[in-house]
Image 1 (tube, one colour):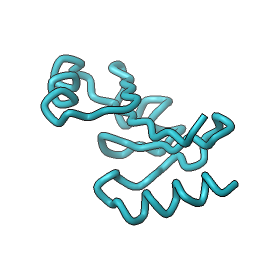
Image 2 (tube, rainbow, N blue to C red):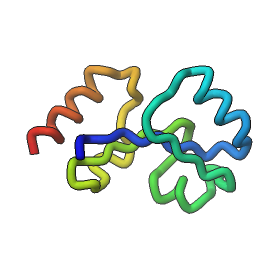
Image 3 (cartoon, one colour):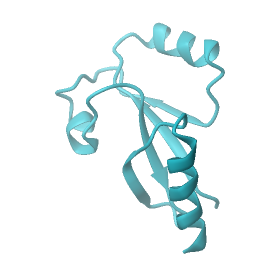
Image 4 (cartoon, rainbow, N blue to C red):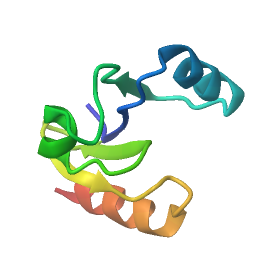
Length: 87
């Protein structure tokens, strides 16, 4: 498996979340805790304070970064991914 970036949302409005994914043509793995909020277990466990939240998964399927940088920060994301691919 290659390195994966997972997007996690704690939005409570699933329809709005789906519409945003479609409108922004967001690919990859998109997850939502629709019962969540900043006080939910997933938000606390992954320190999610805003949405979307990004997580990097390494080649072994383990969480490499529970607070990965936004994909728009290309240089930082590329640096982290390249480091994981070297492992």
